[in-house]
Length: 375
Ligand SMILES: [Mn+2]
Image (cartoon, rainbow, N blue to C red; front, side):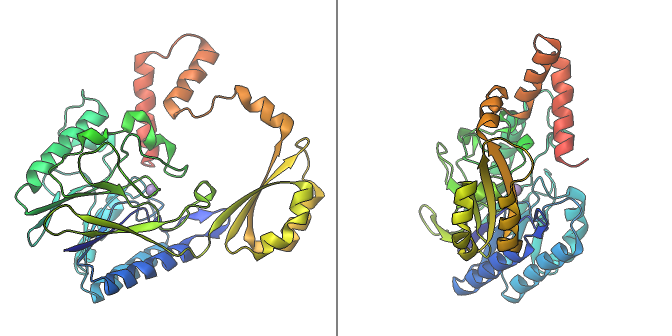
């Protein structure tokens, strides 16, 4: 049996004033061709179909057209919601998409979590927000990662009757290498699930959430993030993008990441003003979108060179940032690489002195998970 694993479509994503839907469309065309040419039986979509909880009409049309093309190919599709998708919106379209053989799992549920296709069982865990996880009857005194682990064992049990077993989910696994676009809040260690807690009874685990294609190291089971289908923002500049072809036969699964062509690759140039002027010709020749980080003596009003760059590069230039040598040295005392909770603890320490009380920490984490769901 041949599966194709994709994730993090983020339909409706914009970068500055530019819609990335043409980039997504270009990627989905390649997915359709792959399904046709490689004889894909089943497509797995591991969450974040839409970028926003209330998708705009153009993005909905793009996704529904994609589903209809897959229906023509008679490719079965199984989808789980990601943290960017609204549970309720995904639920609202689920009845209709069934008609196109697209099976949507909109929220974690013990009753509705298994898709059966021949002798293949697909256990589905949509993005488990802390609130929803405790609402499905899990013990709220347990740590988030422990709650997820318990749910995963339940799913492993549910899928155990299949000759072939796949887990489809949108989760952050500790140790995964990520970019900057996954919404920091859901990537804190508080939310991380350990690789060792992934049940090894599955033949393949199809993950979404982290935007870089990678196999999970330290898991005894074959678990992969397929990553985004195009470079979502400048933190993903220069990265190749993939979908995973998965061949399930007897023995271990064969996984082949297939590299996608990018419609608008992203580029970051870090330059002094003089270099910026000299390299305008080169930048004009580059396909895709550009961000320039301009090194200046001191930050201030926009240097004249910015006008010239905008004039010459037009639509291609999406962002110009200034960094000054002095600004850099000033920024040393700003804590870097901290997750939101650590930052808040730091803020509390500086503002009030002493460590953050447990009850405030609890409220902070609750607000964080609600903010993340756009409530
Ligand atoms: Mn995502």
